[in-house]
Amino acid sequence: MKKYLIAFSVIALTSTAITSCSEDFIDTQFFQSKPQEDIKTIEELQSFVFGAYGTMRGASYYGCDFVTIPEVRSDEMYSNNRSGYYSTVSNYTMLSNDAYASGPYTAMYTTIAKANIILGTSNNLTWGETVDPTKIALKIKQLKGQAYAVRAQALFDALRLFGQQYSGGTTGVVVPLQYNPSANMARSSVQQTQAQIEADFNNALTNLTGNSNQVYEDKTVLNEFSVKALMSRYYLYKGDYAKVRSLVKDVVASGKYSVIPRDSYLTSWTLNNAASNSVFELAVGPIAALGSTSINSKISPDNGYQNVPVKPIVLTYMSEQDIRKSIFAGSDNTSGLFIAAKYPNKNGEDNIRVSRYEEVILNGIEAELKGGDPAKAQGYWELLLKNRLKDIVDAQGNVIKSIAKQIEDLGPIDFDKLKEERRKELIGEGFRMWDLLRWGGPIPKNATNGNATANIPVGDNRLAFPIPLAETNVAGTLVKSNPGYDN
Image (cartoon, rainbow, N blue to C red):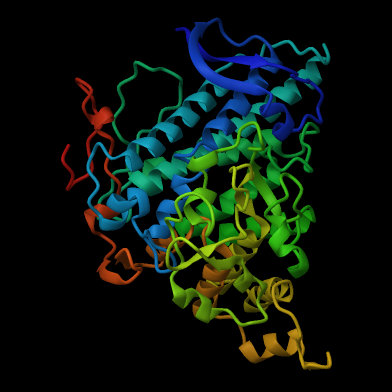
């Protein structure tokens, strides 16, 4: 069987162990398919890893749509229908040819295909850096470890968007484990899909843990701790709180990340591959800028389409001392509040933050509240608040109420407070709909003014996106559509 390599032009492909994905990838363009011989070098394998990351950062995936879709179907943001963006998603009127289904679906399975090519590559490779077989074997393990994690994440994302776990069924998604464009596979069950996700994450850790090729300072390349951060998200959604507690403990104990301080919070979003709270991000930069297809073009108050405003009620949950209240701004062109501080680059050059340390901490809080140690949950919460609040002072600069006193007045952390804390910290980052679903729903149906006109309960078939018509229309396909759609 021939494999299909994505043709690439390399301006400066360095083979040093400290290569930065954000620097190396933007010099590498993946754009044209052609039949090729099997991969023979580590340099080629490395390029495919970067290519998988590149697909993930596309506008239909983490670059925009997969992040904004869970916000417009939530209690914190909505689509105002400017330029028609997200109207079918918001109105629950999607059909099987909807671009908001086919775009993410194609990107996710392209990512999986690239991961499968990497994982199916022989370990008998050469490397321009060394002929030492031990060093070559370790480098291959590091690259394949990333591929396992990428495949796990893409399957998890596909399961959430197209699987039936929230729509009343038991069907998951197609789970291809080899690169074979002619394969005809049926969808696995939710349980089978989850089993493969977990196997892939575990294989990623087996390959990455203790591997000397890991460079933790490069946030654009997955390592053992960023994989554990992604796993903590997956197991939180699955409800395996003991697993989440263990994973969060490991990430915290690594000491490689920190909650961004209050004074740096707003500027941290402009730091590509440099913020202390970034656990894993997808490299973008000026050469690969997403422009009008970026997240900024949808959520910013002064650029692009100004299409996804924030519901005013969100601000009522934040005190005046909370720096997170400063991320919002009005628009001169349309009504409503927008997010100005997250992904602020108007050309869409900001790296995509797939995992932040603050999310890991919030995962830990929830897991500790669910059968763990309430004192540890309180400690995690206070760590976050100490970096978001400021002292209340009078006109003379005298402290009226310290941060510590404000936290004390809030009382102990509980599940309701955790829910609101996730809303405040993660707004605009693609979490809220999934949080509402895993907490039992319902999901609001929002009008173009932000008012909820209905509540969609868990079990409604519309909570699973339609399988794209291009998938179900193939002659002899084994892929079945989701109920309630037109295919």
